[in-house]
Image (tube, rainbow, N blue to C red):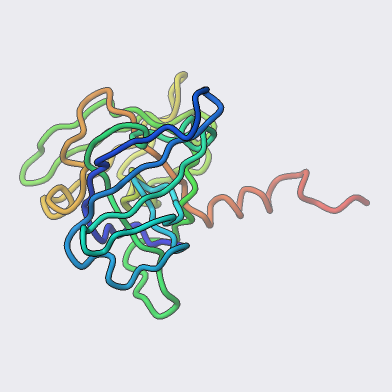
Length: 210
């Protein structure tokens, strides 16, 4: 489990194919901040742009670790198959503060940035989410964008999807990779965990047979 509060900015410094066909995944090497791995051991979970991955090797002295990501995960996420900056979050401990919201680290869909511009001291981010995620998004509800826990300012259902707007304060832009987004950028989205369970409980198919 995670909280959507980014604990470090990393860089995918190497991408190594794990096979010679599209059915094979990739091994990513991530450069992270000094001392970031001091409390990390092999097998620990670290979210990369919101996608939970397992640390398969690490070199604390060189400030880097590696993860193996399957072809399935690559197909269902954005920004994990190439070199570039990345948001990092270590899995939460039972005694940690829940500064954001409950995040599973499982990407529910890929959204597209449709608007990103400064408004006053903050920035307005508009993301078109896949239509199937629309029922889970609500005004003042929570959404995770590239691993960052954010509050939804507005929701508008459209034929091509669900348009959500979010206000980003300067602190968020300074401590995450969201400041590098542009119109058209693909982003990983995770809906609120509680909304997922509520939808399931209210579904007629969830009721026991008479």
